Length: 471
Image (cartoon, rainbow, N blue to C red; front, side, top):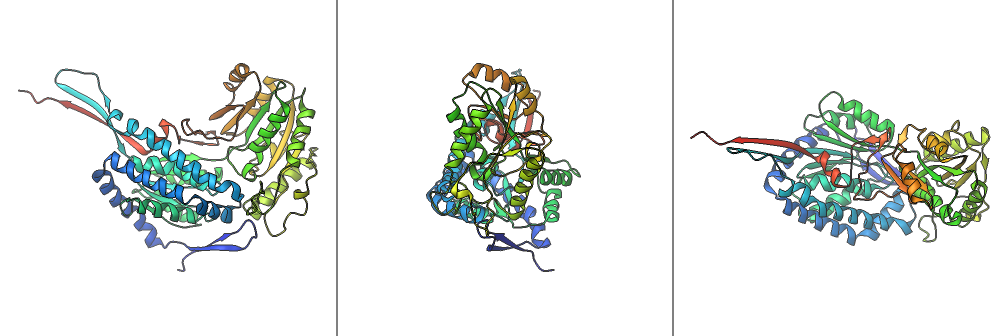
């Protein structure tokens, strides 16, 4: 049987820019076997200090290549060149944070002593889980991968990486950096595939001990279903429909600038982008006018132009979804209040460009307020009170992040206690802080990355109960 041919289609031109060859069934079967052998050697022959040094060197290699790696991200997923190098820098900083916390979580301080008792020793140790399969998305490929890869390696696991066909070079660059840093052979392996069947085969392998998946709800459900045939842990980082609530006391110009950035940065292609905006009725019209001012200054176009702020969305399918959500809203009574902007006109036909769109008069009967759009849309809905805002914020199958914008931080702190989301912000949005747990509620996922709790999925506990031999 011929091997699968995987083409990376440029979102800028819709032409193929990279080709990778898939993996045979025989090669697929060897991956977990090879990984298990590498794990046994790596976990037993290296100390935490040695693993830390390998990770430190690899992060340094990535940092030195940030411009080159950033250019590849722009080519493959269309984010403007002014921002892609920053992803590498942020990923390295995130990795360094995880590195800095690893001694207290994985070293001798991580051993939990039992209650002292004469003639007995009782304690708990954290042990690596084994082989970790990491399946990750294209929208922030280095950031997403670092969340799982760094703690997995520091804990002493071996990993198998499966990238999106849209950004295939990331695993190649990561593997090369860690090889140069001295990581033993086969501790990191990767494969290219567009086949759900192949992914399910690996998920079902008894030699795979933990699965990390970042992607769509449908993809996460498919992975979870495949894993249900056996006892194995699965971490899922899925979608979002993240709300923002703007209270009546804000500085309107400042709030508009922040909300627009949180909604349309990376062309809105972030699981924690602001996708719903609720504004107190007392400032609704003025807020909308301020948003128009901000949008009128944004530049959409060629992502290799350093002045461009918004590039194309990832694919024709994403473009169609975006347009369908906007059309659905307009058909149901919403109003397009997007301001005049020369760069929004005559968008290049070859690429997957869409107009950043401001909608008012939206309701929860519209797709743009219920389904993940994953594009640069700002739907604004007027609300009468804090209670009504919270009710609408919670009216969603998703629960990744949510934000409240106000001068009255004390009141906002009370409001966010009622909001159903894994991360809640006040006067900020779209920022996974490395010292906080990144976790989804509802259909936004399960499990935790980042923070001290981000190491938990990569270790298992082993209890020791030792009694002195009777004399």
